[in-house]
Length: 195
Image (cartoon, rainbow, N blue to C red; front, top):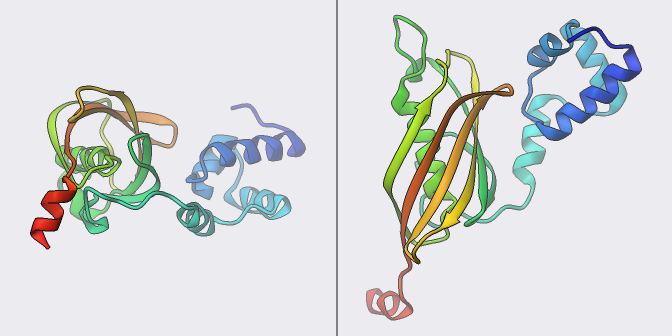
């Protein structure tokens, strides 16, 4: 990106962070070809908080409660959830997620983030992956943050939901997948019998 005048850069910075509040100052500095200090000053002048505060603001927004999983069963942190519609999670790749020799994230970790997000957005007591088709587009490295975005693409028969999940590092798509999620609603009578 060519260097912008201060006012243009700040307008673009505001727009970028409105679209995706998950950027770090370092990522923004690279994107705008300026120093981290310049980004921090721009954010301060614009009244935009640092990443940690932006994440807290996103997390504090009201979103639907999980039904099909417990929060600790989701790989990554859910920051947005509208049952049977869409969800977003963030996963920072740490030492435990990578191959020690290469520093590249293990595929099953990225699959688990996408799969658990697809199941988590399902508005049902019981939700299981019936089928998955996933493509990895580039390796994800130690320290990178994967933002997974899930969206219901269609409702099939009553028991099935088709969910697309795309994973991004910065704005680059690193994985994409289609998940067919089986969902079973517990009937009120079954619930009463259990109690």
